[in-house]
Image 1: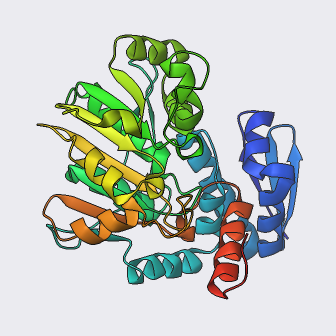
Image 2 (image 1 turned 45 degrees about the vertical axis):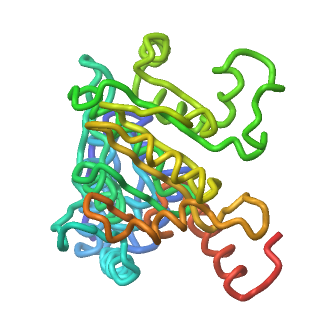
Length: 339
């Protein structure tokens, strides 16, 4: 019988390490066959020597990830518990064409793409959590126009906002414009109450949520008041030319081909565009081709354009999100009625 002790900072670190309702703890205990007991802030592991060593290594690795990123995600657990499966997942992503660079060959990418987070006195790292996310962040760093197609929960919007804020911080752009098609309102917002911000707020809420997670609330409001950050419905982009601007079009699958062309041609000198969306969640009228799908098809061979395709393996929300997406894909693939 062997034993090992792992020291934690406090009870909050223990809760994060063990996961929701001790789910992560149960997984490592079932995998290694060890007994794991928390005494105060000390984790005691006991069992067969080899299994105790395996369990100790896993818990220490989780603790390192937790302290580096302030959170421990489902993807971190999957990757560390079953590295062979993670390798298979990465190979599967490659086989499905995680990314197509129109003007370069295959790049050597890692999970360790980082950028600053917060203000000058509040800097942390936003890391890619999967190979697909690392590819996405690398594409945004290297290409002026990026299309990212992927399922819910894989970080498309969050990472695009992080990259835009990084560009603003480094002064490579002077302005960020957040755009979303207001499909639910038929792009006619006049009847909604309030000023422009109040009208478009429900439609760009995911973009603002991501931004508020990276900047203090007062910072966001100040940048918006100074027109450094602008939010706008897609219909209001017509006729503009934006220089030195980082533009993010979210929910791109809900644009028509004409709308996508209109948006992309707003790009001015020293501007960058990221278009995100999920081609499987099209809310357009039946028979209308998605501007996201059309744009990817038309522009994939143009130099300076990157096409990134994320998969279920890149989902970093609750583990059930991955299973939910997989279940719906299976149902739709079998031809069943998904409505």
